[in-house]
Length: 256
Image 1 (spheres, helix red, strand yellow):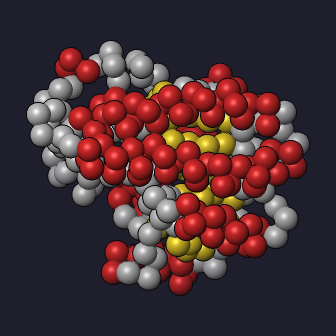
Image 2 (cartoon, one colour):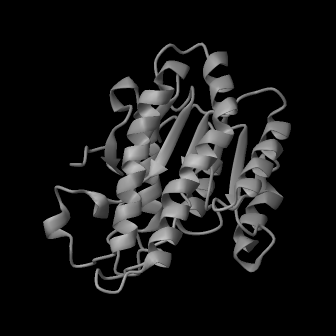
């Protein structure tokens, strides 16, 4: 099992699917983070039950209310996390929350485009901005010189459907608004990689694979556990050369 080395990790969209499994596997690691912040829109709702069960057994797992489409919610979440860290920084932010609509070109409308950009692109932007001071604090307080997830990092969960090079062979699912929002997320990752490099913060986009989740459907090629095991293995090995990279869950580079 790969060693992650992060003392504190925050995951958005943590109440189900990939986000929930990330929390589970982080908790089971021999070098489990000192703090795991599991964020979701309604932590007290029905979909938060599994997360609440985990939190009841692990005192260092903190459930945080965070709606990535609400600036106020994001700011409140950042305050909550900072209060728990008590002067320490945040090592790893995983922007996992997202929505998917398989909408065709001839019927996609303004609301489809706006809603997916708001969640899939603007959400990760605002969340990263809100937690940037804590990421900087972690980077500055680390004895490591290079970029890594044990120092400070932002991981944006990407999609292969936004690859321009692979587009012709992957158009069986038009998903126009989703593709556009995730392509914009890739560009955001590149901007973050250049913008935050001097602060010692690594920024990488990772495609989790076609996973059997509510979003991916049961025809997916990977189980959630397989996908997350791969993601965490890749994350643990990231370094300067991966800053701004677009990778899959195996660590292979994807074509832009």
